[in-house]
Image 1 (cartoon, helix red, strand yellow):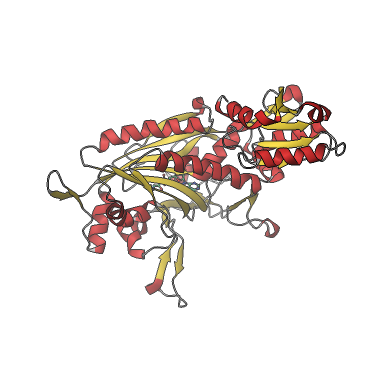
Image 2 (spheres, helix red, strand yellow):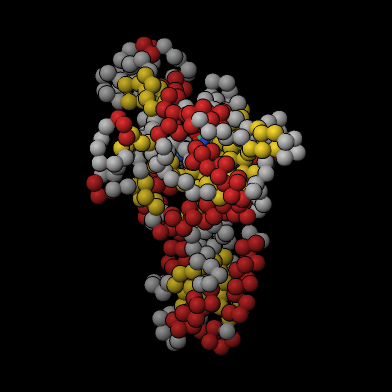
Length: 441
Ligand code: GAP
């Protein structure tokens, strides 16, 4: 299956739109339509619940996108957050050098590498480093004294707030701080739809542990994080770990593992799990001049915790969910998005069979019954078959039809999206029937 089919469905059904489409699109940035934003929110809410509600020692934070520029010097992003950039002098195409090396069987002699676009050899420039951070200015005057950066990761907002958070909540190591928010990277080549974009969302959790307990904690978080994806209904055979080799490690990491998903374009990272040691806290001590240590009451001494980071890309997870759910049901000539009912953007559609005989009025009452529990929509346009197929494409797991029997015995049909089975259910039992079906999915 090609990614183009997903791109087309996303536009048609209102999941994802190209940014500024009427102007021809803009910079590999995407907007999320009504179904996309709900699906994205459902995923991030599950993550937030998993982190902050199910772990007593993990709390939330929402820090600014713009922060003091010294933070990015301290973190190493000003100096080291670079990608190697290569230009073709013939056709003016621009590439990430590491991508070209991979495509050309790891040939690193630039003179021998062919430009993938125009096919010329010997015209590629030597790689030069390109910093991925977006710059802006604070205040009305644009000069070097007031430069600010759009954050390239949400993590630093956690590090610079970690002692305030710890004191405010009287937290003891080990504890974690979770944050969901936008991050920005001026990617050289943005590609694969919402997989690599210049504006995206991260769901990051920084776990502060005693030095020496970091390896054990990293292993625990690896297992917790891979099992999180069960809740989203992702096929576990499409998930795997990839350990970073020495050359791949980010400047802050002692050990790093990616969780990869098998996308239509191949295995690619959706989440990184890193042992960042005390790298960031040491750097912030150095650059701010402030102590970043916590107090160990048992030993009566101060120490710098080590940090285990879990860093998931919300947009990439959304793309994984969309790719995994896409199902061409050839037997029934329909396209179905098989979202897990717990994250589907719409849980149920209520359809009066006809627009007369009091059925729409009953339909409205059923809507009032379901709305407090589930995201429910009402549809009385077109034949019932067409209405169901429209909802199959949107991934709505339950269809409720009000027919003439409803007036007689207060029952409706409950249609299940994947197998199209229909059960007769009493209206009073509808909420329970949907909840049971969601639990047993
Ligand atoms: N704080 C650590 C950090 O940012 P990362 O591996 O650079 O680590 C973490 O990024 C996650 O953020 C990735 O696994 C990916 O899901 C997401 N991500 C990174 N760059 C992205 C981009 N350009 N577009 C979409 N998601 C991106």
